[in-house]
Length: 256
Ligand SMILES: [Zn+2]
Ligand SMILES: [Zn+2]
Image (tube, rainbow, N blue to C red; front, side):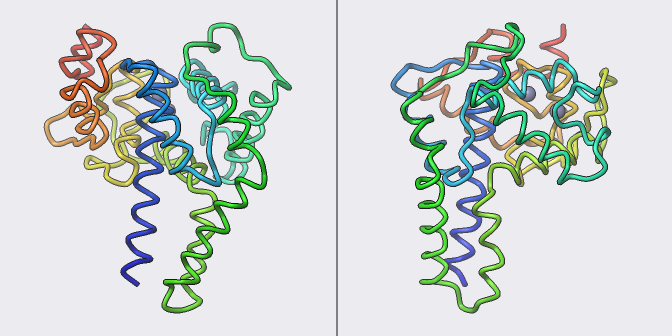
């Protein structure tokens, strides 16, 4: 039981951390910079922790930039206000993501470029034997440590970890919670202490100040990913993209 709990929570948190830190804040927004060596290390860590549901930075960045530009309009790839349920929303998101990955559609130039790229790793990670191999590894862990068969019901969450995080953030973050700012979309802050998705559920704060690496704004809000990123900055691993956001950015400061 303990081994399964540690594995589930560890996989959940590591996967969502690299999604928000590497794919979102670094890849899509360039809120901070890092050396090529650190970029490769974090790229590989994103692949390892997302495993069977790895999202490549290029597709993620293009889709996410569309989301900011068209937030909660018909052109938003995943607004909960244009889909009847979370499954159809995520299916639409997956199809558009896959079209960009396979170059079946090309993005507007303003949404392209400026994201990390490691084509050899993307090609490897996207291969079915690799995705299935991760799934087999998760299953073997459960075979070894699950106290009873009922625990195997948790396995689909491991297989689809990345899209599940996306679904929670995209659905809840634009539907449930409170607003600090009147912005031109329906974004909300769902949790004041967001340890579930490492700060991603401060959607309203983030839509107000997309370049701020700190998604928490008010005194009671805690963005756990930002605490880690600030530690990386203190260690010289990352550098904040602008001096405004380096001081560590409330939305008011960024907007001012
Ligand atoms: Zn959003
Ligand atoms: Zn964003």
